[in-house]
Length: 280
Ligand code: PXL
Image (cartoon, rainbow, N blue to C red; front, side):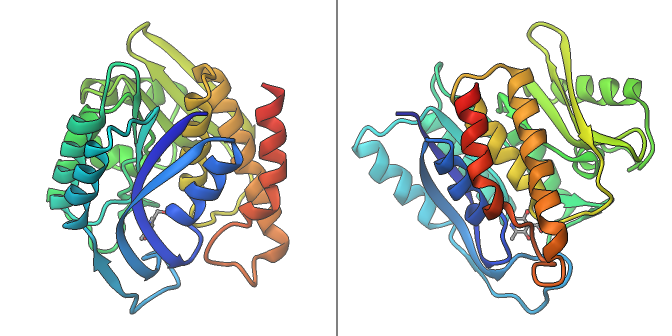
């Protein structure tokens, strides 16, 4: 059985980070160990304020030391939302301890959305995140995160040539295969694009564009992509399954917007995800 470890926060209410990654990757038939980086009462996105934040940075080295003493190893190391610049350094040490020639490192550089950094993030955090991306096999930024990682202006309108150019520049940060999420050239299609710098090939996957934004869809995409690549799917298959499932979740949420404005109804789609994995 495949086994991964995911390192990100627990937002106790709000459907993102660990409360999304754990059920999704488990549904794909992969054992999912977790290192919670912080406990928040809710996520920090739109609609919530006065949330609590308990930093768990100092727990990470002792969890890693205990696991090292047991000789644990993982098929993938997958990071999401990290709470502070110090935490990024500690996660980098975790990669030193648990990275091997066989396993994959997947970094979702959670920084912001809609052109803005999430609450509490600063330029120095972005600089640390760039360094973590350099260590990854795959990174999965959205266009906002791309603009911060590359120090370029955020734009909502762009061409395929632009996407290919920024993918190359993301690879120059040091990551083998950058993947950009939420790519759209018009209002009709939306999807993701990837660049494998080892064979200089680009990959694209598009499906219907739905004009709604729900919190946590980036975490859904990254979790499915991580699961798919851990199961040995190729880049195109990973993009296709992650784009399709993210769209399923967005569509499933629309009838429930009033009750779950803070996240997507991915729970209603887990059966479909299990089906997609069986088909591959
Ligand atoms: O979905 C990314 C995410 C994860 N965790 C926390 C967040 C966010 C985005 O806002 O606030 C705590």
